Amino acid sequence: MSAIIPYAGLALGLIALLVLVFLVIAPPAPRVPIERRRAPGAVQTSTLTRVTDRTVDMIDGVISKRSNPLFGGAELEQAGIRMSPPSFVLMVVCAAIVLAAFGLLIGNGTPWVIPLMVTFAALSPIGAKLVLGVRAGKRRAAFAEQLDDALTLLAGSLRAGHSLLRAIDAVSQETDSPIAEEFARVVNETRIGRDLGDALMNTALRMKSDDFQWVAQAIAINREVGGNLSEVLNQVAFTIRERNQIRRQVKALAAEGKMSAWVLLLLPVGVFAFLLLVRPEYFAGVFTSIWGIFALVVAVVLLIVGSIWMMAVVKVKF
Image (tube, rainbow, N blue to C red; front, side, top):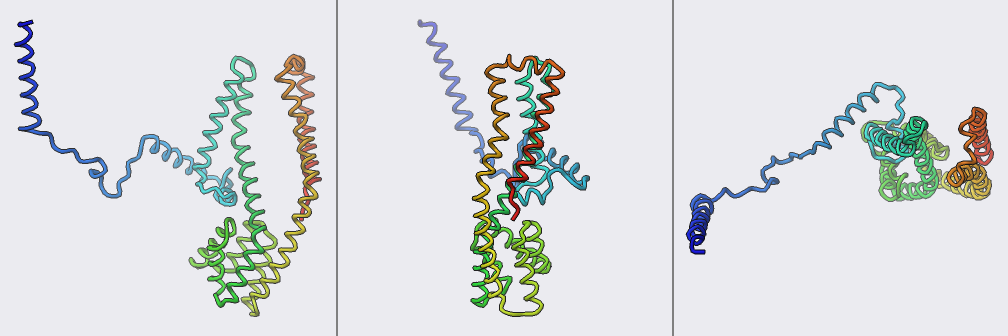
């Protein structure tokens, strides 16, 4: 025990010497936070961000060479998606890779692994197209529903003494999306030199709205011949309101037919999937025989043709 005491004292002496040298005589320089050491405006990007940016730039180069890209900027804008086409394509590609991996997981060890991977990967662009179409349709429907109220507000602003452009700007600030975004775009296009009539007509064509084409034509005629534009807009708003009421009635009457069509379309697919999971031996001969595969192909073709036929019957064009 007495032999350890000198070594313990020596160790304590060395520790005290180190503390004296590194903390008292030559203390370390104070560390400046990394935020203060960066230049003003400098943004630190991670490796993943740099790789993503390079991939997006490469996709942008490929898309710019095509006259009709799969996912264009106008299509994304109509669907209300605030993303650039290269970023959206990158997201679709990542989803396709994930779905292909899911197909590989399902068909691992079977001869169907390649067809499953291709089928699941193809679901990504097809699903993206369907999502864009559905979102664009809902946005146009919301635009049509809001149009009569927007025209009433526009006519009120004109009666209050505002100019037409100022009234459109007020409507863009007081209404909800999507009509607020479209009217704000009209104002911005006019400010950079585009004719107001052309901007309004372009909005009508982009939203595929016959009602708004009437509004654009009424404003164009009034700018040429003059007159009380507020009264004209009130009459147009009344007509559009009556058309919207009839459209809602037609939609309610056609809802039962649409529901029946969906049930008839999904019922055979659901029964087939249920039996395939519960009793796969029922279809053992179907997948191994050439006639069974031919019957499946014929069934799918007939189902697609029937789907198109029923959707055309229950869709009421107004």
